[in-house]
Image 1 (cartoon, rainbow, N blue to C red):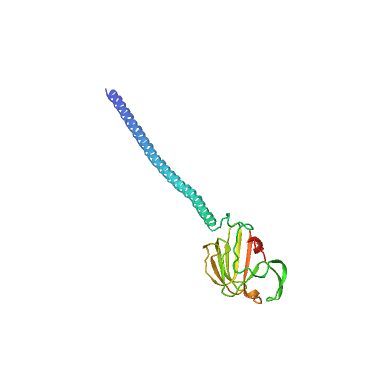
Image 2: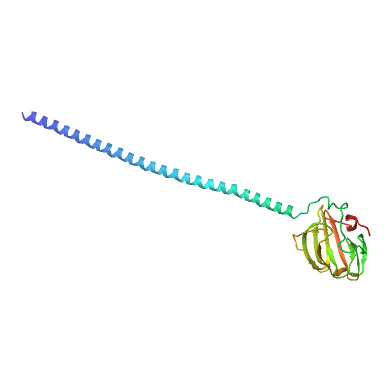
Length: 235
């Protein structure tokens, strides 16, 4: 009987150990799976943050592209404005201002004191030889000087040798320089009409040995030409 009780006691003890082992295994599995779920949540959160950062960078890139697209447009507008300004200050050619063909007024009297010469001639005032790329029209000091045709005043300047100079674009690539003025009655950018006063005769310092006169130069397409020829006049 005692042997039978001892056998039952051993059997119960083994069962108890088995239950304890099962409990330990179950607890270990619970802890393991709980840890795995926690790691997954952290990883998912990290992934979301990376995607948000990428989206922000994409927005910055879009703004830069918009800025780059705007700059060429502004430059184009600036270029167009400059070109338009240049066209407005240029005197167009028409039937009344075609060089060598149209009618041109004398800027002062018709009397020529010194003619146009591309050859070297003696300059008594300066004591040297130089080309005389102009026509000197005799006129007393204070005589009114008029525009030879319609035009646009390109500049009004002062030079120690030439005195006051008014440069006028008369159209057809013809530009006239009225030199040695005492007074000036026009300003840069102003439109003038044929016969309009541009100033009065003064002194041409580098031709001081000559009688009072207007030193008159003409350029066609940037090259000096004889004023009398281009205006259809003769000496």
